Length: 300
Image (cartoon, rainbow, N blue to C red; front, side, top):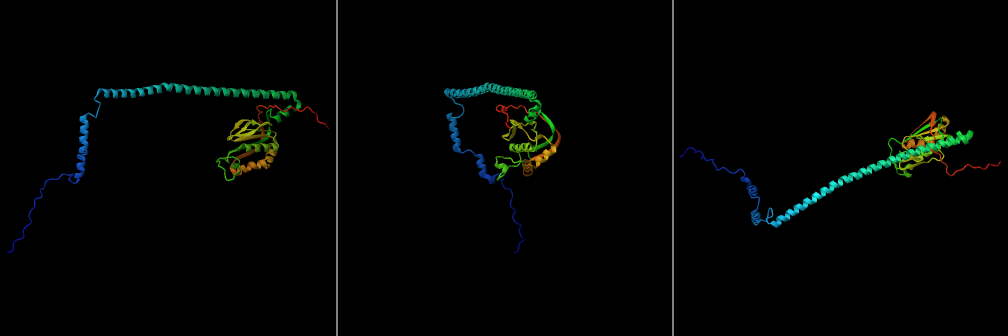
């Protein structure tokens, strides 16, 4: 007999709720029992035996107190010594600064005295030349640099290159020990001065420093010295003479061509102009210690 189809049995969906962290039982166990039982028991035994915390015996407490007092004493003594040494160091530093300032002032005073004495010597030399030299006194003073001069001439300015490079690989200036080919050196100024003398200059000054027969142009490190006085660029060379002729002869001379080569190859900046009135100061001092005028008359 055929029966009607039976609906599927209804199954209850009500179940006991599960823990949210049921799938993480291992992690939960680790978090709940982070300290191993063996470690916990050892810590408990140590606590019962009194091995942890502050010392319980009087002797141990006194030892700890003595150690703390000693440490505090060391720190206190160190701080006191540092506090006491600070004023001493500051006082010594200030004394050194004061000494440097006093010595600097004394050196400046001595330099001023030297300049005054040089001016006095120059004035006495000029007076002696006028008294004993007769008509040739002025000429002797001009040629020796003992008197100030003025007249037509040329103005030559020599300056370092704007961007000075480093030479090498057989570079002629670098081969002579010049580390910077764009810098004006003492030997460059020597050639400039010699070229002007050879071209007919009657008196020359560099940056206001009058040149004489006893003048020396040399180097001290990177500085150029004229009679032991340092000069700074640009170097302004004033020469008294026949301006147009002096300028032409110098530029066509070997020394003028040398200066032009420095300008072309190394960027040394130069400029020369003819001046209608050039004024040169007298040399600080002209002292001759060895040479004496000859008293012998020439024979015909």
